[in-house]
Image (cartoon, rainbow, N blue to C red; front, side):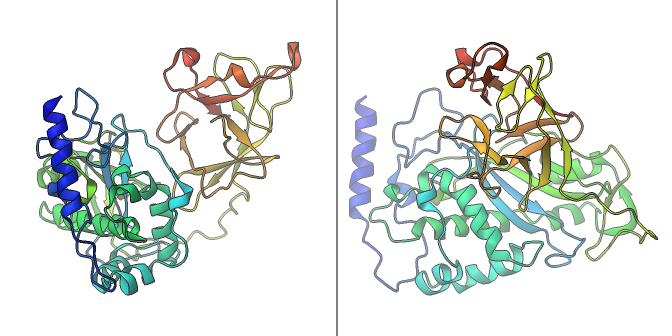
Length: 408
């Protein structure tokens, strides 16, 4: 107890001693210096007891995932570098929060924040070069990544600065994301082991796995696309202290690679699939089908509730702009209401509610979770006309009867 009080006293003294940045001064580091936090803090996800000071310990997002893309069709970024996608604060079990605080969202353009306010044109130029969006609108990707993931980084909250300078948390998120990306040159990792882009050469999953593990120091997650071509890499970390101190520890992946055992392509940028004469036109509006609960009669109706005797609603599975999928019924896009219940209607934004879809099992998930349960508190109607909302399973007593949502 005395040790904890002493650590907090040292923290308070260090914070109060920090001079505020003057207007127009280039901001090179965090307002809350890394050494303001106790030096004996454990890494995130490794503590046996709760850490009270949330400005010095990341929780529940204790895993930081640095993600990169190899976009060759269309070609995005330099021919000898992967592009930065984001820095994600996942929970210790691999699930995550998203869009945590709308009051912290980026409003307006990002360039004035980086260049005009914080005088860091070098950071902006690196983002322009390496943090690329496939549709050419890079700022929309930057905004999305901060709003979805940056607002969930607890040690970047304005209350963790003393004093807080407007947009400082936004600046820090981009600064740290780029800094972490620069320490992980995926192209160089692979090339050092003879894995280079080629239209004809193929590689095994073990070759890619061994190469990335050798240079990162821990097993890495990677994913292939429909052409059996490697296109995505995720690097996992734990964190000690505030994220502003960037004291990351590399850890093994929390997901297994999603590539075939052999015949993997690493296409050069600019490669495109062979032209097929008179190709069939793809269906418009995404896949359509029902959402059912295995081992339960009935299905989900248009408002998102489970109904045992009614007509199943037709749902659309639509590709989301920045990854994942959107779900849509005749009521509108789907998301979660104020009671954290799955629901569909005109008030849900497709840019905010991005679901996951396992193409092999046809199961629907959200924030890395695929277990759902009923919410009896929200049921309405009687007898055969009773409707019951569903929600993501949280492991509580109310969610003992968990199930999957399956698209059929």
